Length: 118
Length: 111
Image (cartoon, rainbow over all chains, first blue to last red; front, side):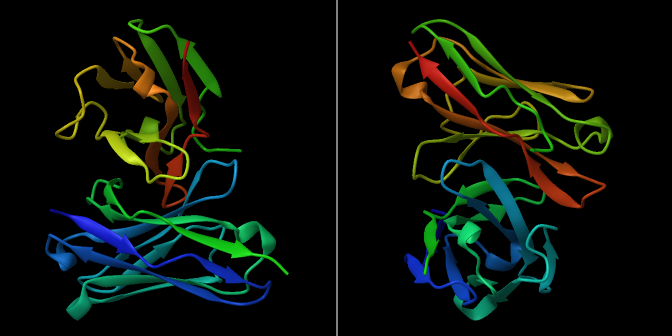
């Protein structure tokens, strides 16, 4: 069955970087994109960006553009999302999702809590 | 301010029918981009409830249905159950932003 397993919770200080992983299983990794979405405490869902593992193409949302970098490793079927220059308002639950190609996510990781505090 | 507009909350008694609206614009729902719906429980991953306007993934009860017309879409839930109490989000693609866009979310309370 399709599963997306994310790395564990992270705590960082402002200005630091964090890299979250998303290991896919149960399907051909290169046949689907991986999208990243976050939810800040008490807030709604916010799209971060998408990576296409078959060719490495990425598209990023405007709000984090310039601070986010997505990569993928085909041999291990793992996608990564790195966020640099962390700010307090980057504190959120970060999710990866399998992008069906219709711009939606049909399977989701369990979420990774990133906490930014001094 | 979310690109797609949803009511902050809706409520209904068990067994009743509720609808959640989602309003977009020319650059997303009005450009024929599909709408998708997710169900969220606190601290959990979103669950895809409806995809491409009207389709239910396997395992989603047929009490949930979606529709779309022009720049608006809606999610209907019939035969409300206590377990339906959750947050619901609509999502689409915006051609001007080249981005997934979400509604602000609607909290469903089962009275």
